[in-house]
Each structure stands twice: as C-alpha cells, then as structure tokens.
Length: 189
Figure (cartoon, rainbow, N blue to C red):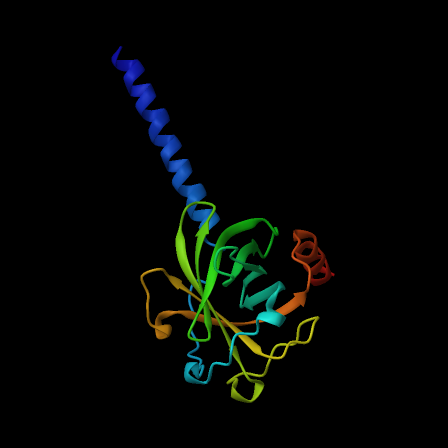
C-alpha cells in the first residue's frame, strides 16, 4: 500500500514539474524580457486614438522578441461605446497566446490581456504625431496617420515609466493568422 502511495506521489510531482516547465515556456513569448533603452515617449503629446486606422494586424519587434497583434474595433450594443478586441500571436508560430479587450481612456486604449496559461498583464496603445516621436516611425505594409506605441507590463504597474514601450507597425488590414504566417515566411527567406 505504501509503495502505491509513493508511486502516486511521484507521478503527481513529476506532472506538476512538467506543468510548471511548460507554463514558463509558454509565457516567455508574451512580452520582451526587458527594455534596456529608456525611450522618452512624450505621453503628454498623445494624439486622439485613431479608431479609423487601427483595425488590422500589427507587428511588434524588439531584439529577439517578435509578436503580432490582431486589433478589431467593436461597438457595445447597449452603449455604442467602441472597444478594441486584441489577440496576440506568437512571433515564431503565429499561435494565439493571449487575448483581451481594450477601452479608451485619456487618448489611450488600455487592455487587460490574459495568456493561454492564465497570466494577466496590461497592454496600452498610444498614438503620436510623427513629429512628436522620439524614434523614426516604423513603416509597415500599410500607411498609417499616427506612430503607434505599444506598452506592456504587469497588471499592477500603473505608471508608464514601469512599462516596456515598443513602436508597432501595421502589416495588414486583415485579422487572420494566415497573414501572420505569410509575414513569417517572408522573414525567413
């Protein structure tokens, strides 16, 4: 009897170790590990959010980190308020790794994202005029009126100075994983 309990305990513990390892592996692609360069984004110069321009597939890239974001504008039926449905795709596999809904507050769209493994984090989208951007604007496949800044961080981080900031570029007006995979194929050539 004791040997059966020991075997069951070992199987359970090894399963938990595997789950923790798989969890950590899945979570490493959600956001960059760090942001070593301080970028003085002038948050006080944020432009009105470009709702007419935002829907589509956007690419975020920094060092070895690449991720795609499908942004879809929806309206709440009850209030007519615009919201942004956000899906994050892994930059190596184009698998959906996190989802969330964003709402506009003070010229920014704030979204609470939840990963497939259950981690919750904060994403903020902010638009800037090209002349106010501290970095040259990234040029995607589609022209956009604003320079878009994507900011990541732990949910409890409230100040923008604690977030990781990345410029993103629009690569397609479609929201499919196929567009993500096509972009990855062109990068590997």
